[in-house]
Image (cartoon, rainbow, N blue to C red):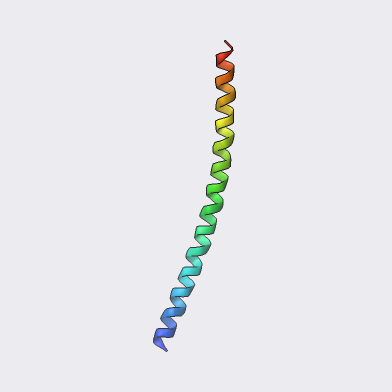
Length: 52
């Protein structure tokens, strides 16, 4: 019985970790989108500077 309880605890910890990884993945996707927006803005800025 003790081993079963330990396995249940481990399973719960793995589920918590999986949820945290999903949250992290979402944050990375948001960050990636922001970086793409920033890259586009830098390209626009660079294009404007080249026109001078």
